[in-house]
Length: 61
Image (cartoon, rainbow, N blue to C red; front, side, top):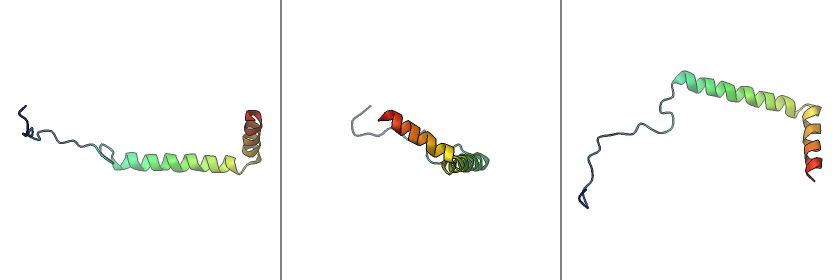
């Protein structure tokens, strides 16, 4: 390679946000995220979750 000369851009990279992801995969990921957040919300507002957190905190002290 000669200093000061660039190699020709023969390969274009298709990487980046959303590359290789179809619309259905994106929708599926959003649905899984909403489902996981719903489960977390349910257990967060249940008494069992709070008792579990208190037990973990007390055992760590």
